[in-house]
Image (cartoon, rainbow, N blue to C red; front, side):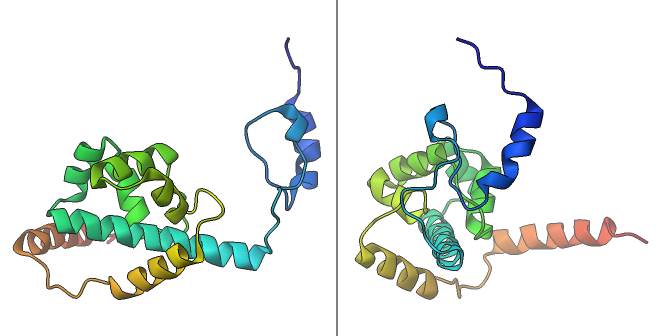
Length: 165
């Protein structure tokens, strides 16, 4: 069976998708509201909170092992770019395969890390509360290591050299 849906059809239907959950799957679900509708403001805050918490968690676990982002990327078999974005961007939704790789690397239940990363709905209120408490207390106060300072100086040099005259 071949479906012939044109680009114009998708563009004409785009205005109907506002506020709906759209994803890859059976065509029978296109344009139907999500099963659980969360107000946009609440959803946005919860999602950002989860991504921020997950990013902090990954960073702390990585630092606990004494790993650089590159080291963790190799061990978890994920891209270093993805890890940098996870650790630094609260709006980024991590790839499911990345979360599974990190769960395996950290020897933790993948199901809980997927919830913590905000990729599924649900999870206990205790998990959410503790993850926020963890994120709030986990900001690093440690001075830069010699390696971090060297990397920072090299990066600052490039920033200065690459700036417009």
